[in-house]
Amino acid sequence: MSKIASFESYGEPAPSSNKGSYVSDGSNRSGSVTVKTMDGSHHSEAQAVSLTVDGFGTVKDPLSGEVQPVKRFTWTNENGMSVQVISYGAIITSIKIPGKNGAVDDVVLGFDNIPGYQGANNPYFGATVGRVANRIGGGRFTIDGVVYEITKNFEGRHQLHGGKIGFDKFNWTSHVEGTVVTLSHTNMDGHEGYPGTVLASVTYELKEDNRLVVKFQAVADKPTPVNLTNHSYFNLAGHNTGHEEVYRHIISLNADRITETDEDSIPTGKLLCVGGTPYDLRIPRELGPAMSRTPGEGYDNNFCITKGTEQGMTFTARVVHPHSGRVLEVYTDQPGVQLYTSNFMPDPNRNIRPKPINAADYYELTHLEPVVPSMATDLPIRGKGGAKYFKHGAFCLETQNYPDAINHANFPNSVLVPGETYSHEVVYKFGLLEEN
Image (cartoon, rainbow, N blue to C red; front, side):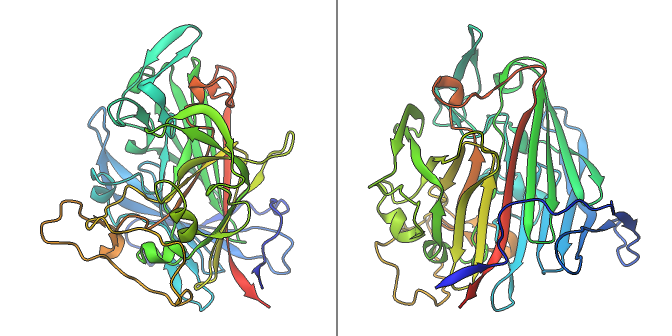
């Protein structure tokens, strides 16, 4: 049996009187700034978390055409973990974590530069998506008797992730306080068909115990739907290890229902119990064999998180990669989480599919990259360090309100009204298996 080393119940460390200080970085000639703070806690020795700010190219504002510099924020802690976020799209570009053998790997998919993130084949790697994440059926909704028609960028009939120019296509403004980075974006009234101007923000902070804390907030001057999420693609074996290693992950989700969807992945309004179905992940299961039992041989479903009455932050998911020993736990205050297994990423030979039983060399790391035929049109996505990304090469855990909640009265409310604040917190906590 294995257990997770140093994982404790979710909770903030004791407050610290040290609010951090700016430290000159004489070795960096690109104009970066390093911020260090000592985060007091229950540990016998406090550990430093550092934040470095530098540049990541430039972008043009998608509406005004103004050229804007992109900032990059890099956190490191004394456990050897590092996280990188850029102001463009408030995107998580890198999360590096040591495995049980000491090797440090980047466990999220992404690109090395801005052109990659602006490419047509970018499936929202690491992005903050909105104004409404996931799908809105029919590209329309009604608020106070007024029907709003919004951009239809999914199957020509529905909206996905905020439309053609969602929140992920803007360069967010930034503010740094200690090792907390706040990124902000103002989305104007009428953009993509939505009513009201929305001011949204997302804060990122890496903690000394390997928790990445992400907090979204938004306010609006008219009633409007809001549902923000982060769209990181994880592979705990390493971002470039492909589908075979994703299949070997072990996953569990704290959810006893899913939202039923139609052939376009639009919710019908029904909630289905997961018991006796391929969606019952309440007990840890190997991801590949579990995927093989789903109708499409992969997950792209909203799971309804099981929460107590008035419960806030709730354990949502645990994912383990046995060979590397890496563990990811997710906590959120949201009612749902979308498990997506990269079903629509490239599959040049149409032969990437999970098996009912993983291969016998379960604990041997493999990298079986598909051979791309010379005449193939479904080419791999070229990622960081020249990596080739294919179907089932990663999984997403997008904490959120239920998809299309604006069109279903029995789903949690998604309308933000003036005078109220939308709030959404998610914590990604990384650790290692500890063998007995």
